[in-house]
Length: 406
Image (cartoon, rainbow, N blue to C red):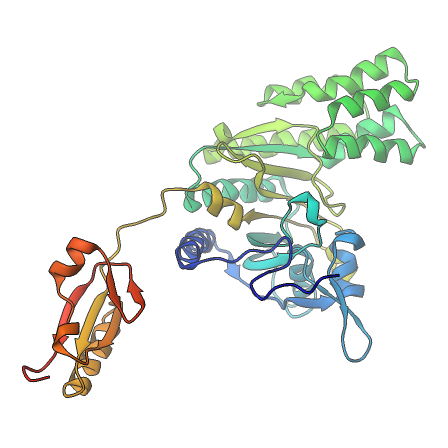
């Protein structure tokens, strides 16, 4: 194994240069402000968690967890998502808070990846959790807030695909009862959007023609409210029908919010975490080939931390949004360049402090010789100031404190 060079970094991580950081922070700020206006209070949790608590509860496979040992030999993990850490806090530090709880967060999370996969090992999530409400109104609220958050982030064209874990589970229990391995195989194909594999697996199960036709009909269940009636024809299973009823009530609330135009029902949607128990959804931006948000209901997760209450939520992939949003460059005030010589240093730095206190961006520059004095005409013509190897790439507003004999 060769030693990495000084400028190299591990696979799956990236450096964010100043302009990217500015844009990312702008996305985060707009989204968190949007969530705050919906009544969600921000929470922060540690980067490191115990493997036996948050690591196990997160439903991230062991192969995707970054594990390490502390000096007492206890297994720790870098957080792989934020829902499980928030569930831990809700079940402990916030256990006496009245329900429902509305919490938001922004954090970097870590998942081990194979180098050739081209996936990210560290990425950023901004999201919410609504704890203590199992109603369709709560599920609709988080979907509507996800839509508002995507708009706040600057994503202009997107679709939310919404499904229900219970409908698919009921359908599979009816078609292949007492065959959990077959059910998991079919779910795996749907999760990977491998519909060819799904059909091939169905063919190997020796179902009746009616059952096989019904299961294949699942792949066509995408659209608006009309999908609710079409789906009822596929299954008489109680879980499937009750799940579908819940999902259709969520749709009705979304219509009342006036956001159903952004949503489609997709009953193949099952979510990529095993702790999901009900409605799940993913958001896709028109300009990007992967989800920019995901979420759903997870009514059993908090029970693992000793507080059996229902919950629902979502997260945005803010660094993915950064890569796809191009109109974040708002017009900003020009920085102020305060130039001074040694004689008037105190006066100049005092003025710089005053300007900063008023909210201006101020850069200071010591001028040793009058020949080093930079003028507006220089920067307007060259759009750059160069001094002793230092480059200033912006055009400044100037304040000079240089004595006549400096």
